[in-house]
Image 1 (cartoon, rainbow, N blue to C red):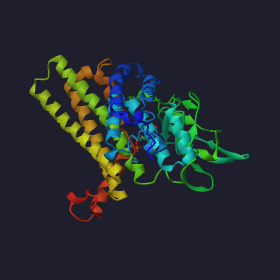
Image 2 (cartoon, rainbow, N blue to C red; image 1 turned 45 degrees about the horizontal axis):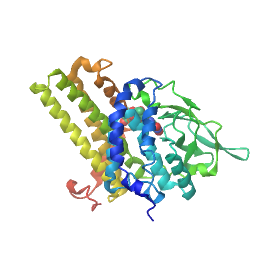
Image 3 (cartoon, rainbow, N blue to C red; image 1 turned 30 degrees about the vertical axis):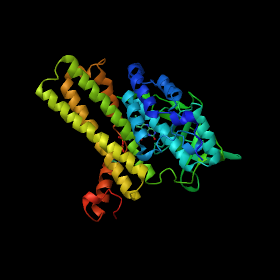
Image 4 (tube, rainbow, N blue to C red; image 1 turned 90 degrees about the vertical axis):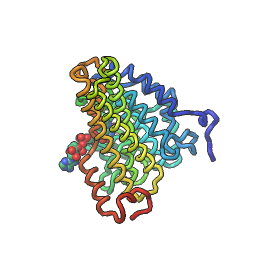
Length: 382
Ligand SMILES: Cc1cc2nc3c(=O)[nH]c(=O)nc-3n(C[C@H](O)[C@H](O)[C@H](O)COP(=O)(O)OP(=O)(O)OC[C@H]3O[C@@H](n4cnc5c(N)ncnc54)[C@H](O)[C@@H]3O)c2cc1C
């Protein structure tokens, strides 16, 4: 039975994200430091209902992401990324975690963790770890406890519900856990001295000694990496990146207008090239969201599609960066010019895992398919 209240039904997540996109840019410059964090913007996400929005309708939420083609979620991620890429990265992790809870949690876990999201807890998904000190679950006395760290963990010290992957001694496969954390504990941001995305607090989190209850373990071993959801989820970070590309484009466009240089045919041609790249990325993100949400294609074909989506959006981002920097010139490299931080943030956030593997993986899927290339993506193919 649909448990949504009239207030839930009237809720407009896209309108809420538009508000975030209009306020976050004014705070982003002050947050742009090694220990920065968009605390006020995360509070806005909570206040505007966006932290709770991905809770499924069946659990009394608004089910953001469950709409046909995930079109509202794609818009929300794009808009939040437009406002601040660091905030967009954090929000994407939060959405990912709640979707994993919805898919793999039992009834008690879903009730408890959705209540936490409603109460304003920020979730994160932390999978990346160093080769020599990754997360391990061990027997300790009469219970279980964690040892090791997660690295490149966005929101380290701020995320208070961390969905992490871990191995367990003597048990095959990788487990998924949702660990409660206290604000400001166990985080080390000292290595996060990056060119961009400085406000994302992407640090190291040491879980050593943290006790684990059975109810902290989510799903079956290897649930986290189950395809096509694992690779297919990359459309969400591409949607956030799209917002970052649009922000760079608008800073570039505003510069041309402000300086009266827009009428020059070379500047216009570059802006036109940028618009082509941008609209291409927008179409790819829409297609990616629909492909995963509709789930008509076989899993390997969904993964191939999303690999193309993420690489096409990366390409568009690199193209727009180059065009914008060439158009604006040295001004765009001076601190204080809007393009300067936006370029650093985008260049950094475009770095995602294994791009070469994504490209050749998609190509291999295309190579082995039968039939006409134009029919590969319509769901009625082998
Ligand atoms: C701002 C930001 C926030 C992040 N937040 C999180 C988070 O909250 N949680 C989390 O789990 N992770 C997070 N990450 C980490 C992210 O998931 C990836 O681990 C990271 O972005 C990988 O980037 P990379 O360029 O080092 O990728 P790599 O995969 O190392 O790619 C670098 C280059 O090496 C190539 N390559 C890859 N593998 C091989 C190989 N075996 N042999 C040869 N070449 C290879 C690639 O194709 C590419 O050309 C974050 C990253 C960023 C940028």
